Each structure stands twice: as C-alpha cells, then as structure tokens.
Amino acid sequence: MALVHLNDMLNHAYRHNYALGAFGVVDLRFLSGIMQAAENCRAPVVLNLIEAHFCHYDFELLMPAVLAAAKRAAVPVAINFDHGSSHEHAGRAIRAGCNGVMVDTSMLPFSDNLWQTRELVNIAHACGVTVEGELGYVPGVTGESAKLHPGELSYTSAAEAAGFVARTGVDSLAVSIGTVHGRMKGMPKLDYNRLAKIHEATSIPLVIHGGTGLSDEQYRKLISHGVAKINYYTALAEVAARSVREQCAADRKADYGNLPDHVSEVVRVETERCMRLWGAGGRAAEVLAQCKPWAEVRHLTLFNISSAIAENEIPVLLGETVAAIEMRPGVRRVHIAKTDQARYSLMVDFSSREAMNNHRKLGKELSLHQKLLMNNMEDTLSLELQTQ
Image 1 (spheres, rainbow, N blue to C red):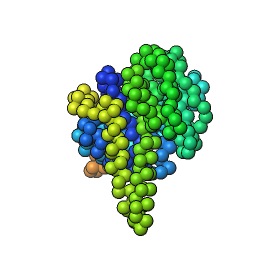
Image 2: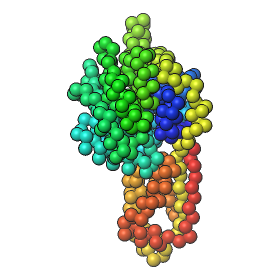
Image 3: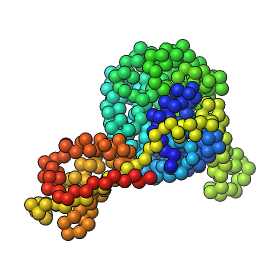
Image 4: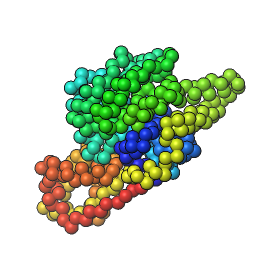
C-alpha cells in the first residue's frame, strides 16, 4: 500500500527542488498509463480527479479503481480532487478517499476567495487532508478549456499571496504567472520575476495549472522558483485522441473494443517524459521513507442499551446517531447492528486517523436524544482497526 499524505509529498518536492506531476485521470486507460509510468520511473505521482470531467465518467464508480491502483502501487501515490465547485463536493471527495482537495474560488474578489478557502482548510485539515488554494486567475483557451475557465488572465500578486497564505493556512498555492488551461498558440510568456517574489513571500509549495505546452527550460525555471506540483491533462488527452484517430484511419473496420488499445501506452510515454523532466524520477524510495502512509481507519464500539430506553425508541435513536455521524468530514461508512438480545455494534470507517480523532472531538455535539442514548450505553468496548 503506497498511498501517502499529499502534504508530505509536496514538501519533499519543494525541499528537494523537483515537481510532482498531478495527472488528470478520466478513465481506466489513463489510470493504467499514468501508474505504469510512475512504476517505470520510480516516481511519486498525484492522481488528479477534476470535477469538470465528471460529466465524462461516474466519480463514484471510478474512484474505487483509483484507490485500488494507488494501494497496490510500489511507488508513493496521492489522490487529489481538483477544481471543485463547492465545499460540499470537496467533502464528498474526502469521503470517497481523496487526500487532497482544491475548490476553485479564484474568480471571486480577494476577500471572498480568502474566507471560502479558509473554511475549506478548517474542514479538510480536520481530516488530515491537504488543501490547495488559488490566487489570480488562469483562464482557458479554445474548446472545453475556454468554456470551463472563461475570462481574462489575472496575475497573482506577491503581496496578496503572502496575506492569503498566512490567513487561510493553505498547504500549497496555485499561482497565475502566464499559463493557461488548454494549449496556447505559440509559447506562453511566463513572469518569472513575479513567481520569484511570490516564492519569497509565501515559502510554501507553489502549483502551476495549465502545464501543457511549456518548453523544457520553462519547466526547469518554474521548479527553481518554488513550483512543486504541475497539473497536466491537455497533452495526455491530445496524445490519446491522436492514437484513436490513427487506429481508425489504419483499420476502418476495427470494433470499438480495439480502438483505444494504444491509449494507455501513449499516456504512459508522455507521463514518463514529464516525470523525468520535472525531476521526480528515481525519488520513490526516499519519498516513501519520509512520508506518512495514508490509511483508512475503522472504529468499532460494542455496547448494551439500558433497559430504561423503551424498545420502540431504540431504532429512532440509532437512526439519528447514524445520520449525525455520516455528515461528519472524513466518515466513509457507518453501520449499527444488533449482535444479540441487548448488545449492539457501531462500526465507523474513516478516511484517515485524523478524521477519526476529529469525530471524537465532535462527540459532545450530539443531539439530546443521541446523548440520552449514549448515556445509557453499558459495558462499552471501543476498538480501533486499520482497514488497509
């Protein structure tokens, strides 16, 4: 199991002057190609699940496959929820297993972006989840990118970045210095002086959105100025689409199952190129040694209910308890079962140990009915089990 804390990975890259690739996953072929590249390069990798792409796949169906791929990997892996539209959706991603989240409020006025990001930090940090903020605005260009990220480029201010980081507590910051979502015609002109000032003002890992289309030298300069994560999807989508078109042209009678055969391979090749160029290749062993593992935790409570509680009240109280626990950040599953005539078991699966500890702190906020139930539990036995 090689799932690790994203914040540990980011800070390792930041300290050692290389960049993690956060590669967009849209299906199993992309997932397979990205993971094979990471294994071949012995590189840490971030699997990026972008909310705008959920129209192409069912997040609830793909996420278990992403988790399975990460758990069986021999290299360090983190799973990031990218460009979310709300805190509610970020919470859903945390419950599903993501250990990094980013809700895009960069188009809002500075004060609104700040308080919404700070609220997300409070929610996510209670579960041990890494939060990426964004300051400035990275627009999209032609096609889907332009539709998803409309408007004009707005550069990140170093002075605002310093205040934003200090007041929100974000773990990393996506900055706008001239890149775009999608592929720009011609070579992007990047403001390295601005980036250097942001790096000096914030002293946290910086992130580039719109990583496609830059030169090798531009990537190296970005990394030398504090960039520790580069989001990368457009180029992968381009090579995948080209592969399918070439197969269609080569064999007009090919059936659907054979058309995407080479997608995993071309995605692997492009991902490997980036990992080696950005300095992540060969880092897997040291990252695994220095990063905390990320593991789901199960908490089991066995209890008796006092005879003072009427039999017909018990199902209502148990239902309220389950509903209250399910709403808490980082809770993945809740199950209450009757084990014998008077004994019950409460099993709660948490996305992380931090989420479990936060749940315990919130125990005082139960409703009056739930408090009555809890106060009438007898012979309580509490167990903590690691599920992975």
